Amino acid sequence: MEPHCCEADVIVGLEPFACREVAALGAHHAHAAQPGVIQFSVRALRPLLGLQTALSVYLLRRYAVPRPRALLGDQHLRALFAHIDTALGLAPRGAYRTFMLGAAGAGSAVMTRLKSAVARHTGLREVNEEGDLLIRIRPSRNPFPDPSPPNGRGRQEAAAGNGPASGWDVLVRLSPRPLATRAWRVCNIAGSLQATVAHAMALLTRPTPDDVYLNLGCGSGTLLIERAMAGPARRLIGCDTDRQALTCAQANIAAYREGAKGERREFELREWDMRCLPLSDASVDAITADLPFGHRVGSHDDNVALYPALLREAARVAKPGARCVFITAEVRLLESALAQTPSPWLRDSTFRVNLGGLRPAIFALRRA
Image (tube, rainbow, N blue to C red):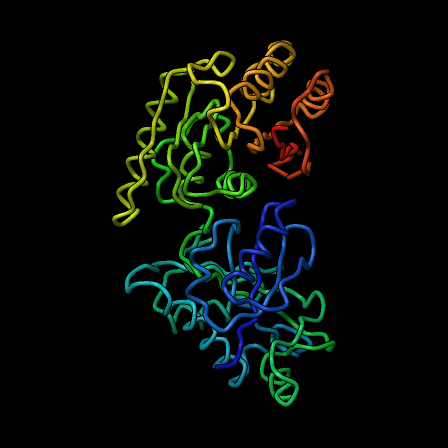
């Protein structure tokens, strides 16, 4: 079986996490093609449907043609249909009902003929947005690393349109919905953290089955559930002072359990103030928090008092060597709070992510 060329959309800033995740699934040549996009080659497509740090993943085929009109030729059209059938074959029968073709000039005569051909071949209904089958057509951006062995290089490039020649890319999404659309999210509240970011934060705690994991200000349960998805833990504790948020988290946890297929994860939801926790000193292995940004939740003045108090209380309950991962757009404020002496927190890394115009920073800390 020849390798497939693939592309995944990711939150800008999470490219290294997504590259590591696809590499763990046997992918080769994983690299950031541009901010928010990774490319790679892989032999088995189905495992990609379980990616947790990617927004969406696509099967990519490059056609060495000068204009999209050439895609309507018999040879290229048959190749395109095979490309589409490969993606459709990964889902249960009936999972796809609609399709959408995204391209510059999507209303042109050429694209209209192409959409008609896709509709006839698949039997799917065309829609203008949020189609189950998503097809994207664009000019080729850059050469894709050839995934075939040296003796098959020419054949692979000819088949896929790889290599330095200009042409057009056709991308077909491998799932009826974006991977970032979590099935467990049945309840949402304003300011909920994006799931792929939460998963990356959970990974930064370096999960182990013996962890006592604490999610401060758990809200609707995103970080808590994504930590459970990252692997077993001895205890999974989420706390918040907002009863409505805890009720929402409970609903999401119930949906997660229903879809976990026999997975046993015990969650503890507590109505606790993160500044004064009823936990013993040095009792927690990992801590995460989506801190109030002062935008949708809280205010800057509140955060001036909250951040130092939170860091002190987290340091009290954290074991030596415990890992703590925070995300906030109040970057300077958290920097200032960490600089206060004496500080028991050592910084492993800090990096920015792009969340719909906001550019919060993720702080990965370690308890001295």
